[in-house]
Image (cartoon, rainbow, N blue to C red; front, side, top):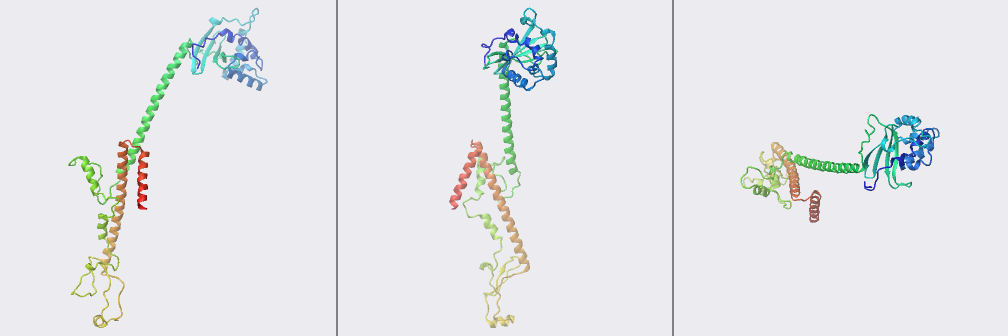
Length: 387
């Protein structure tokens, strides 16, 4: 960026003194003269050189204006008598200090512009301060157009000197930086709030799930209004949790008691002995047990009591009664349902435990990535122990 201390105000007569007399010729000729091209900015110079050679019928004055709607009026002014040179001096009669009105503005850090307006001629010249131009640095013509109505500076704006233009640019830059900073900070806050709401909604779905754990159905979180301190109540509830490494599960043992034994494997103590003999015994209908036929008796005794073949035995199991069979099936179904509820309760407990550990980690300053790494390490250690 070139500072205002090194940029001087343009010498309007030096910059435009040779371009004004060439406008009448530009309204008739298709190619510009060589002495006009160094007065144009690099962009306008390239536009004139390329497009004038592409068209062999249109005059090149149209290339000096970027607004096609103003080209007819610009051509009309160039062909009028107001730009005719004086017969004696050969120059256009203009009072450069009185007739020219100039305004300045800085567009960005590399672009400083000036708008020169000739109200009597109804012409405007937008000048650009160029640096690094092969044909020389300084003020160059960036566009030639006609004056706007009602004010020639309505769209350009600008101020009366370069120092004021630099000051306004710096102030607008500071305000833009502050507004962008506030916008970015507000966006970051809103994004953070959205993330927090998403996390709350995610964990709230677990809290809304109905508890179906057989043993403890209340949350392990401290309950308000209870006896004793909240911390003691919180940790006391973990006394009833089955340890992961303990193979003895009281709930599982209680469920196994309700399951009927396999066929032919009834406990010996459950089979009553009548009159000290080991005759065939049947369980009562409420027990619903299954028994096997007793030891084969001697041929004489068996024949006297039943009249059957003494060699006939009954090795297959038979139900004590039809009512006892139905009761056993119902108990099996009830045990299966309890086992399913138990599995669901264990999964719920694992999910709530992971949730509590994750919230505890966040409160301690551990981020999500570190928490996932800790959980993965523990799972890998359990895999090694199982092997």
